[in-house]
Image (cartoon, rainbow, N blue to C red):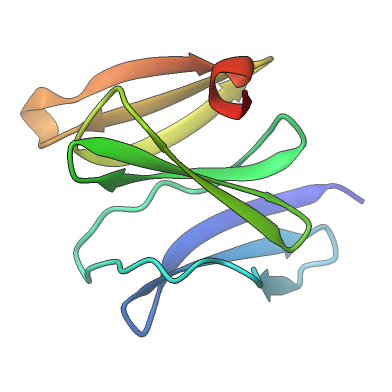
Length: 118
């Protein structure tokens, strides 16, 4: 049974992630680090990348990459694009993301799996 959908949101001002399984049941991610998220912060839906649920959030002048294998989350600060992350997509071993400070200044960025997990 494959994954039907992942979603990101906030609960009590903190990042929350949910997964919709093929049976139609939503499950909230457990073990997620406490990361503050504002009411108007856009959140890109997580993607399956390299065998782990993955999402990316803005973190000052860098980004924070969160990856989960089961209930074990790793958090890694990465440099590259800045601003709001509005979309994530995966093609093979490449993660693509759309990020920028506003709608007029967004760009498409890519990162190889080995660069993000090494």
